[in-house]
Picture 1 (cartoon, helix red, strand yellow):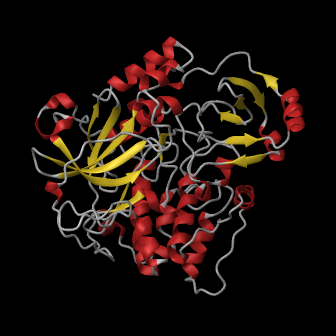
Picture 2 (cartoon, one colour):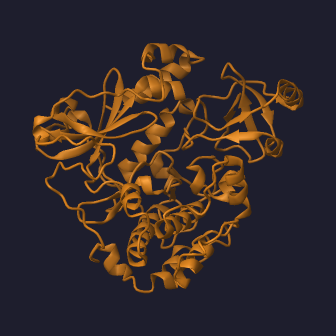
Picture 3 (cartoon, one colour):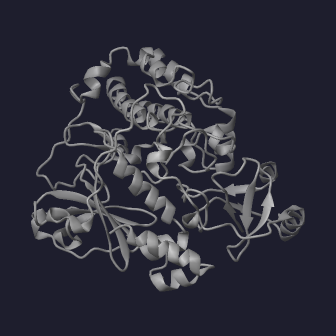
Length: 470
């Protein structure tokens, strides 16, 4: 089993591999991957400039002789890849300065800094937050619904276990999410209030979006009517427009990452894969069913990859399943690369919707709707959106097609991972936080994880990064 490494700034023809000791030792060309079976995780984990860990892209060599032949063909890599957290990196403000293809050039306006634990008030300390219940679970930890005992408001608290972050070498992934959420300020994007750090975990306090995930809403309804699909697609377009004007590529657009507010509008969450991309980037990351061909082929991608994912999402909202939906991952990737999909023969589809999806799912990123010279304005002018008043939509003045029924400000019934507690008010449920991650053995301690890092410099880089969370 060989774990894949890739440099964000490396030419697309270079791909690095590591042996059982998790140290990079070989280098191969992408065309050599065609003869091997690729095993992806549910969602690729990325850390900016390198990949590592059991959840990364892996190549499995089926036979020992094949492995020996493979080893004899690769070129030895003379030195270990540098730790991404020790690499010099431009500040986000500098990276946001230029645009690769804006729909409307906009001067960069950064919101105030995220309040740290020392600012006082409701966000002065972690102990101000009392756990209500669990909302979700991911690779690095869990998300809880919490209530602040100072302002008595409800928030979402993401708890990330430090030992898991070190084990999977994902500190750049976490810092990138924090920094981007710190600098964006849009009604279409979840708001980060503050961050904390203690001995065992990192904490991100965000607003609580009470309506739950679009994924759960879609799962209950199987598919959405055309008017509802148009509304959600239009709001998502406005969210992508805001990000792309600031050179931010989202790269993980899917129903699970779209939340519905109590007023029925959408918000994007989970910015772990988002990145400032002035030109192109070669990182292979995302969710398999939503990956654009240029991402799979390591050809270099930009915001046009988000429009491919938008086409997948619109298709899924209309029919209840994505267009590329295969159990065999190798078959899934082949169909994506070839751009081969079909519309259900037994279901009526609006001609404008069919044309929009076809224009978004063009394999050539330069010919894809939204990625052409006219940019996102051409997408907004498509006949599918002919009844959308973009000015009113941007003001959230268009009545949503569905508004979740809310019993109280801490209602969590729209999150599928939440066990219902009958007859209990949120203020009566007090528990301790847990940063344990289901992806890593529970006996793994931070000290042990740090001791497994190859150099003292890398350990110090992680400790410095952790302290930056407060």
